[in-house]
Length: 438
Image (cartoon, rainbow, N blue to C red; front, side, top):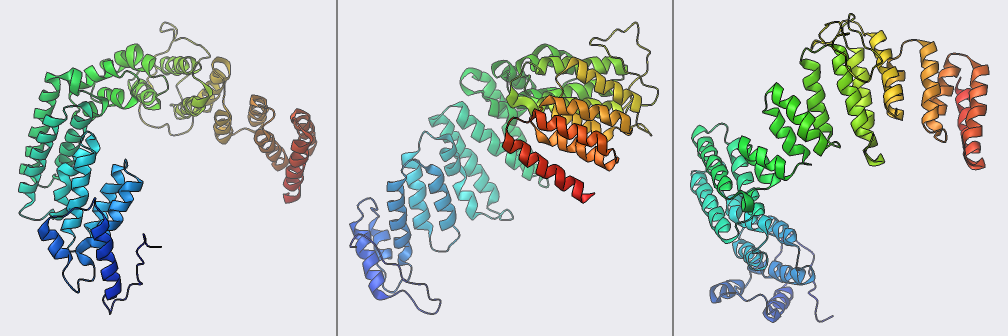
């Protein structure tokens, strides 16, 4: 087909076939989009140049961007690949020029162009400082042209990255720290047009984080960053009054709040009340947050398991300070598990939450007594009676205990609970396999 170039097989000992060179040059001349300067065109016409000074690469590139004109990341990757080879500056510049022309209002593309020259500078090169200053100047021009939250996010991300990687170069680290401080002031001057979640996260400025959590109250990352820098009193106040009501789906926030409660020195029953409040609040979330519900329930029984032996829990939904003996939780793990507190925690979840399969699996892992295990298995099978996994776990436990009559009874109940004959047949096969292994 006349519109295609036939590329020859590469041979390390021979140059390209002259016919291929002529074909490539002819095709290149026919591509109107690839308009080069007279100097570049003369360089490409040099006889005997096996790689045609990038002519083939430019042809491929021009054809590719016609097929996928709106994908700037493809052009970024193309430029990165070209940069791995020598004598490809003209080709790479062609790619960069196309990004600048076609993606002038794309913050990520502009950011890439701001730092594209750094790929040619070694981290140990004396030219690095000048190259970084040039990158900062490029960002300054980009922000002048494109003063948006997205462009500011790219700029402060660049500054934070270089501040962090310059840990061994104090003067360079101080330079980027100063630029970050200046950027925070510049964003604060025009918060309405410059502040975004990403900008606030990178700058980690206290005032900007506070403003950002008001603007983006459902952002787990923003709240976590703000709370990690807050005092204990502020953690309690902000979590209970603002963060958790706005983002009840955020596991990181529950971790911060419950970790604060556990290390605060408050009595165990008061921490227990915090957990029960967490169960109540997350119970209103949809099924897509089932993992969070299971996580909180498992965290609760793990915490109770590790309490000191003197710590007591109560089956209450609210903490009564007058009735509670003042036994602080402590931050170190108990020498031996507090089985009584663990069982009380299990009962609290069963009575004040909607127990999940994961919760029961964890309780069964921890429970040391066979009689209590039997009770837990019974409850686990009731969560979803058509799920064969809890039934099989129960049967495995009974067979291991050599309680075969009880196993037969459980098998019959499970079979009755399964919805179809196919389910019952498959379940029977699994049960028979379990018996054969014994």
